[in-house]
Length: 298
View (tube, rainbow, N blue to C red):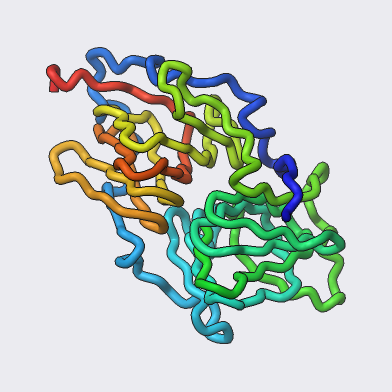
């Protein structure tokens, strides 16, 4: 059995939710504000893509079945969030990346091994932190394809370890060793004391100050009510049946692996359908807030 370990994040991120203050959904009331006012120019249009409709693109023709889908950003130019699919049994081999990244398992049993350490395997909801220029190996265990969502802090590259280059050369000072935390060991923190069961864990960043990636857990049957956020965000469903409704459109429901894009200041509603708790990975492009909407005023 995998030993439960506390997630240690890289130098470019802050510690888990213990370092931030709990944010209440009752906070930051929208009042008479117009959500669209102040929205950033060029905000992407809302979209919702079920897992069976994702337009997968091959990552490397030398590895048949290895696929990817860009959720946000451009991996060829800078920071990006990507959903990747690995065929069962695929092993990446020892390699490293110029940029640091964090990963969350969406489907399958995924093994991440830091060179010099024992392999660590986790299922859906497990998270890990990969420091820049640290040699590691990834493997999708037999039994089913794996889907993971990863956030790269800079341009994506893949450099096989051939022993000719010292990866740590050029790595940012203060980089800490990475670890993997299984879902049963995640240090969940209440998102709102007034709503029991609503939990969160920060993967990287600080949602009270700027951009961040957050794993959120919602109890079955929970409904957020109409609301909006100052910052845009993208979401990936890890567990449960999740319904995301853009104001003025029909509700859209999907399961694990589905993705959606939520523009800044657009009114919407979220619901975890009955049958089981939901887990969502959300990447906020700016400080996270929650602005409830008085539906009578709409």
